[in-house]
Length: 91
Length: 417
Image (cartoon, rainbow over all chains, first blue to last red; front, side, top):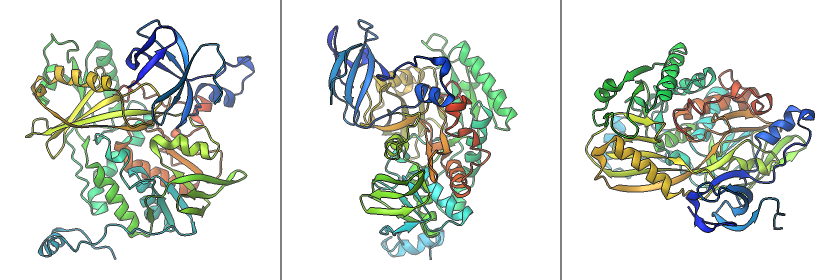
């Protein structure tokens, strides 16, 4: 449990938010061309990093907007928050 | 020579004030090379080593453990054992384990306190009723004992449940597996460790894996905090940290690691003599032999390795517990903790070879791995020794995420993930 600084609403309790998993997984441009291995990679395989990870979050019980977060999963410390479409901060 | 535990050894050691018990397992330094190494000294890892030595004559093997054995999720779970899963593949896997549980104490000469007190799953809405009836039929077709109970029968089996139709999520029925129950989780790790050690397995504690050395597509050994150890076969049984080990070998797994919480109350006299689980409101409760209520809460929905979950998860579970069991309203909770569980997209485990020769993974047990400990160890040992899965774990291969042949137990696992 921690506080999240929503880029639209400001600092709110984490329980207002929904975690949306790993960020920057690009949807395949040519889905019909994909092999089964590539589909598995896109759909199921995850980095699941212990450490600094890029994620998507949704302010489900607030503005309902999606945004990105850089968070250290080993101590839940939030490093950065940036809007959808913005470039991720360099580490 | 390992001394046998018996009433006579108990009396003999009582006479010397229990100061001369033999060590249950040794504390060896790692050798330079092993035939196989198991990464992770929890129940599943120790069971794997035990069956590798016992059934496949692989005695030159080691278990390496970052902390102390049984100090991870083996010691953190709520000890529920059952096999009433929906799909044939899961039913085969979990009932294989349940059958081993039934004679495990005798086999290990170690009392794992397996208690077949029954597990009841409650239905709180019409869809629950339909799902649980379907699962009961599926279980019976697979030879697994299961009965469907109506509300009166639920009340009769566990009288302290509030079956009033006026609560927010009324009890509409439930299923009962009488062969299911609980066991003493620490004892399972200790019993397997003692059994494996007696057959020559090296159990190396405080030894963290730092890297997996590969030669092309084959495993050559592992880098640890106690130096490099050579081996051709590595079985990874690292639960919540499976992805961390996989990343060392350059593999990606379909896992997300999340905190799962549990809590126990102060000890009280016997009040609930079974295990009651409730999927819809996410509450499950049993009573330990010490008298504590053992309560399982849910997972948080974000990836975290912090071993502490959110307060609202515990609050939600306790709200549900209090509505179902008003008698617990003045109980005080003694301890609360979190563990990191590795969850697959289909809520089924992975017991599988990988694209790297000699590297095997046993992971993805999510919120319910304890019940499978003996079966998981047995089947994973078979997979490592023969470089081929047993027919009971063939469906739980890593390739199912490519073929699409998932074992989707999300709805049927009887616990919401």
